[in-house]
Amino acid sequence: MASRYAAVIGGAKRLPSALWILLWFTCLAPFTILGYGSDNDSWRVARAAAEIWETHSYVRSRTTGFPLFEIGVSPAVALGGWRLSNLLVLLSGAACLAALVKLKNLRELRHPAAVAAGFALLPVFVKNATSTMDYIPALAALLWAYVAVLRGRSLAAGLLVGLSTGLRPASVLFLLPCGWFMYREHGRRAALKMILGGIAWSVVCYSPALLTYGLSTPGALVTVAVRERIVIGGYNALKLFGILQSVLLAGAFLFGFLKARGSGYLRSSHFSFHAIAIGAWLALFAVFPFEAEYLLAAVPSLMLVLDRILGRRGVIVVVAALLSYHVVQLEVLGGESGYRKLDIRAHSGYTVDDVRDRIFKLSTRSAASEYHAPQPTVLFFGEPWIPSTNEKWIYDADRGMYRQRDGRLYVSAAILDEAVIRERREEGFRLIVWKRAKWEFIRLGQRQVPEGIEVIDDLGELFGVPIRGRSLTDR
Image (cartoon, rainbow, N blue to C red; front, side, top):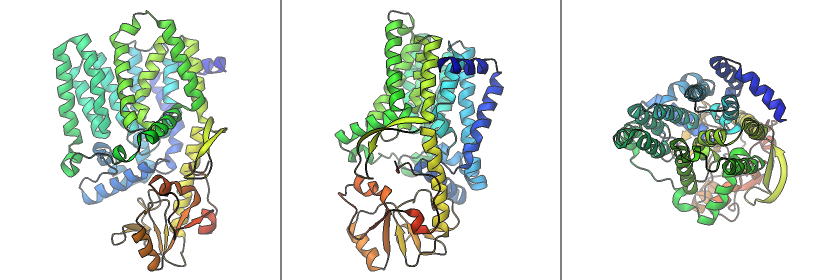
């Protein structure tokens, strides 16, 4: 296995950098036609972007707002739908790879081909580089901020961190490692200039959200118990690379640190930069452990440290293991939606699941849009993606739900208010939820699906057409 990957990486090493990036872009471009993404938030971003384009005023897609991305992607969503908005994100992925090329030129990489392959083809990177999500554009700005820091350009670094903050507010944490590096390498004045500039630009770039909504605190910060937060965080952290792959990665780091013990690298500004960056992202993840992607910004630092403490063969073995996550993973959860239990088994890989889910979303979106309900019906499933940027659906402000423009089907997130449920029943609505989506009610505080809501087994049977793909909840 290692020799096979060595041959592939060796071949990649001989390709010109621009051609390598173009090849990567071309290989990933087909994924961009599969809807806005498997992440429900990607459809929420598209919904907000379409409204921004229509109203010419800022609308946030979720709690804190991600203004530069939501505003920046709005023309693409309005003019080309997901095919264009996903390509825009894919271009930012190419900017990430261009930053790696620059780091190679700055002699920051000992094994550039292996690191580039491991980063550019990492399953979580591939998924988010082909979806309408802000992770990759924000990461591109941070990588170029790191390049600016290495070159001693404090103002440019601050500007880039500010740009990334406008894309994802959490990016402001990157000022911590950047400030430390500038202080150690260029002195207090350079560090202060970079930090103050970074804060100022962060405020400017995030100002559309601040001026429209003020400071917002995510509700999950206060509603999730500590014990549940730990369980969720542990599971999602392992989902970043895969369970088996994470174990191998941890072992590789342990071996590498023991081997590098006493070396100059572990006492260098470069290592302390990455240690502070990883620590900052882990600390944030401890508070918000709800998506594996919240750790994505730590991946470049992990790869760069690994590149320094392991030899070439060791890096290639780790990269091979990380890339195997595309097709195979170890799953530890089983059981019915809302009542998960420990069930260790081999499962299809991260990218396979992602593609299936994206096809599933497009299939259910089409089926729901064409469905002719015999009576007013509320489906508590698919609200993020079925009506988003879909001309066949409109928002019913009176009921707070989306409905078919020319039909009687409504879609909604889980409703926990029993009075509202009772009201809908009295109005003659049929209330249904797919069995794989029951977890929405369980997660939000119910022991079971509220009385009066029918649980259905098969969406295809409901809509009268076969549903293609497979939901990520159907495991």
